Figure 1 (cartoon, helix red, strand yellow):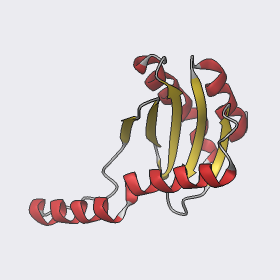
Figure 2 (figure 1 turned 90 degrees about the vertical axis):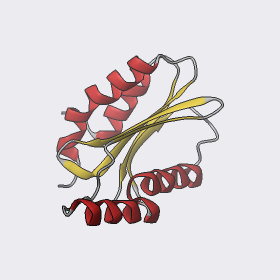
Figure 3 (figure 1 turned 180 degrees about the vertical axis):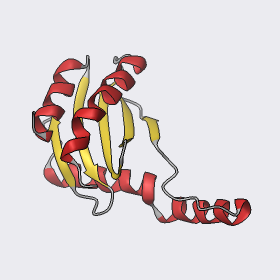
Length: 136
């Protein structure tokens, strides 16, 4: 069984125009594993991107909306966001919660030449490999 860094490297190698792949702990905001091809992706840059991902999935505003929904529905609504796709001027970001590991997030970043379907397929294909390495 490959380790998390090797899985990240494999996804980057397999996806056309991939720039990086990471696994983020949504509880702490720390990177559990990462591989990238971009020289300016310094550790502080990677840490900032991981923190931004935490905000998108577990941030204060998301929690407030989930509480409002829970009150309206009369049921518990928490950690309801499972996948996000974000597009910038030069990149696509594919993000997915690791199934069965609600505090683990996989993130694939590609250039805009990447095929969206292939990005999602590569990310989703990696999730079962990632899961055994993530805390429950």
